Image 1 (spheres, one colour):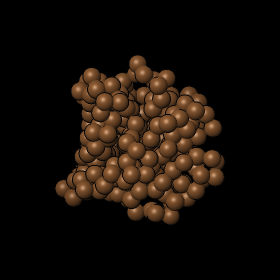
Image 2: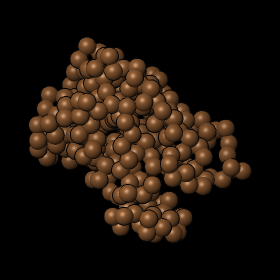
Image 3: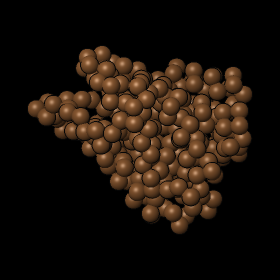
Image 4: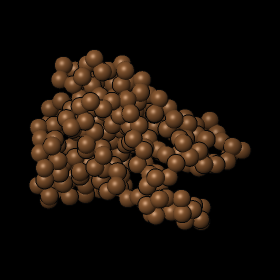
Length: 250
């Protein structure tokens, strides 16, 4: 364990598995007290908390669907009760579905935008209230689909394009309040969801590996350290940036 984030309180949305779980563990290993948010997988979130505790860290699981305003407000109330006001927010919660234009529905559009964009804004609003006067760091998890623009991702890539723009906008808006806002944009990372997608799409992962200068797809452990860095005072002069972590695939 390091003390890079000692005394800090961090909220990670969608942290019961995959990239979010690894981010929560990495933040805790750097000394932060971590709120592991989950929407439905209580068992997953409690496993992350148990792993953090076993490693000597401090964490608590808090349920909340980030697309619902009341849940977001409650998430930050629970954070304050458990550890005090937040210092770090990682907007990791997200949903996606890859579908051709002909299969697009209003329902699917609102499902993805409701969590990936509105949820991110609601969480950022509540975090900024708790940061006020002390400053803080917001890290948004975007996606390399914004630049890669693969077929069948029109809704999902659109949400992440919005995330990148919101990141820069909020950095300009909140900078005077000592709040930094950055994004991390992962390429293809082997998580539960990505594994299912790669299996369905056949050669997608193989093609990605061929394009990657480093010759492999990513793992959650490739993403978490840069999030911890951006959360720390070491990144105090970095804001409004989208940091691509994709093994070199553009």
